[in-house]
Length: 109
Image (cartoon, rainbow, N blue to C red; front, side):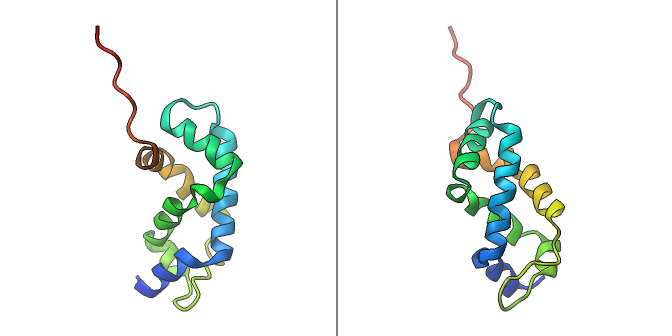
């Protein structure tokens, strides 16, 4: 794992565009979800750039993505779209909780 590649991934504009597209694609399937995951879906569908950073961090800490990336520029061409979509989908709920907080506990009477 290269620390240079991990850092370069975060600032690579081509990868960021792919991630934003994957966010929008995933969000389109989840806009009806409840709670933080649904809020993230609605935000990600209309403005994926506003929620992309935590997803970029997930890619920049994924060993397979880092190993495929260029140390100098963060180009991640060898990483296929299905892998990016999987990482986005798999981390969706955790990132939603990070951004919007845990669900409210049910009211007690």
